[in-house]
Length: 558
Image 1 (tube, rainbow, N blue to C red):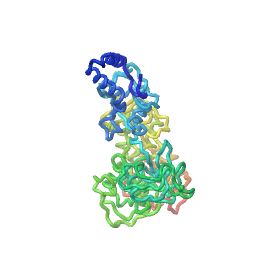
Image 2 (image 1 turned 180 degrees about the vertical axis):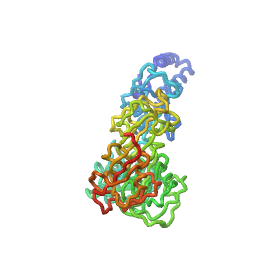
Image 3 (image 1 turned 135 degrees about the horizontal axis):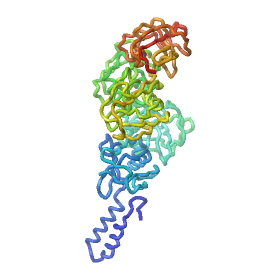
Image 4 (image 1 turned 30 degrees about the vertical axis):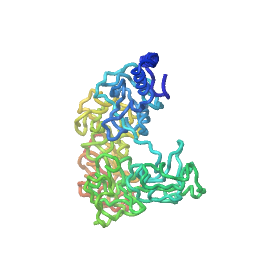
């Protein structure tokens, strides 16, 4: 027997209740005992039977389940995203993002509302210890309000969830107090401005709220007064002027998650930031505020493309410990005369990185697991696996996948072995493997490494370390004009590609096609990428493809 599809009676508990019932009329103690049993079985919330502990929030951490009054962990063998989805749903934590030892194996289908409703095997198939305790990260609180089509979690058109359907808001009487409630509910800081006239495009579906009136202190938008769900006097034109909200979080544009061109809110528009006035301390704050890891690289010269609109007219002077960029001190004016050719780009660490290579796009593969970086064993590692890592890092195509600790042995745990990617996954953690945590027969001499195309490549030269120089800009490969280029620029390219020193730099024997992206290169020799060298500007030149540059570097591996 079960109560509301939640807790089930055991046979022992049922027999005990019948025994107690026979003695109720004479035994007060028995009556009290039965009341406690009923309370425990029927009333205590079943959501108390699972929890996530030692994570940064209640929606991330080690999975623990309550069994016979005692909390225990779950072994990570056979744990998959269907099991994770059930836990996240039961805790009200949105979707699964990543994800005494319990002596049963979960076999969830993924649609259960609670983990104790999942089928379970009688015993585990695996011999587990606490080294195998499973951890889980859920997306977080499942909000009833969202901002969409604004380029980030904290900007866009306001939509609310009602009766399982998302709808918009009419702009009648909407003001900054209403906006402040939405910002607070989403954890997005203070409200900066409200914009109408379909600034982020018109919505669709029902118009759920009109005449919203918040005091500004409410914890959720739904607790504010309004005309009533679905009640409004908005015509079709007003449907397209639903209220929009813009928040002061910075944006990273033009790259994958945690990398891109830095943009900040200035007035009511987004502005780019000059590369001459952006340093490591500024980068620390931006990466932290966006929920990314530590800064990996600050890139100048519009490495993620030229922005539009204005360049920010102030200089950030962050100390590096601020939680939000708007808390950083700022100078009143820029020290430099900047254009969009100087837009700064930023790469923050996410869950995978390449280390000890010549650039951020070449090196030993390391993944972050349980707060610790570890390596990947080269067993079964191939170009499909490499392609996923390069894409995740925003480093273009995979050029080479090498094992045997090509960029030196790592240290710490070896987190993954026998990785199997289809090549279409968005992150390496979505690929299959033999499992994490000490399931391998590898040493750090087998640490896998790879080289991605990044933003430069050498083509039609027989090896990846020789050929015509091409750079990637705005998603398109183009050539480099030899006019005005120095040998120093060639040194930067060879080093960026992990191809050693330079053997020769000449005009290419084979003409390229497409745009000629760079000319009149001026490099100091210390740049980590060719894009950080000075030039006339993207696409600005007086050249033809008969002037395309060609290099031969000293590196020899294919």
